[in-house]
Picture 1 (spheres, one colour):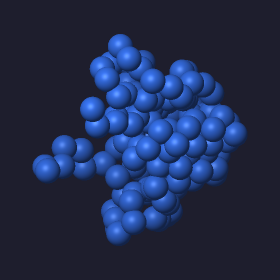
Picture 2 (cartoon, rainbow, N blue to C red; picture 1 turned 45 degrees about the vertical axis):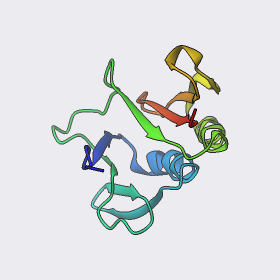
Picture 3 (cartoon, rainbow, N blue to C red; picture 1 turned 60 degrees about the vertical axis):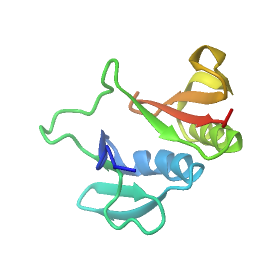
Amino acid sequence: MRKVVSYLTIGCNDLDQAVAFYDPVLAALGLGRIWMQNGWAGYGPEGDDHGTILLCPPYDEQPARAGNGMMIGLHAETQSEVDAFHAAALANGGSCEGPPGPRASYGEGYYLAYVRDPTGNKLSAFFKADP
């Protein structure tokens, strides 16, 4: 399958606070922090040496803030991963934007959760069962 997204950058104002949130939240989906340098952190699956999700201060040196209407949807392998993602987010400074559960209005087999990180960025973890 062709890769569509090379990487995502998520602006943060406090890298220590951001990694304290993203380390457990992304670990719940099988992603780990693979590097941290010069005020940036990179996360990806095992074997990734670049990073798919990058945390960094905004390039324009203005404070990071959530984008209105932007959301990052992350794939989960199971409903349990969606549940763990949501629980980790709430335990590490995030807020709930929609608890884990089926979303019949999206179609058969969809199971999602929505959260916001400490900066206000909206994230979703989703699992779709085979029909």
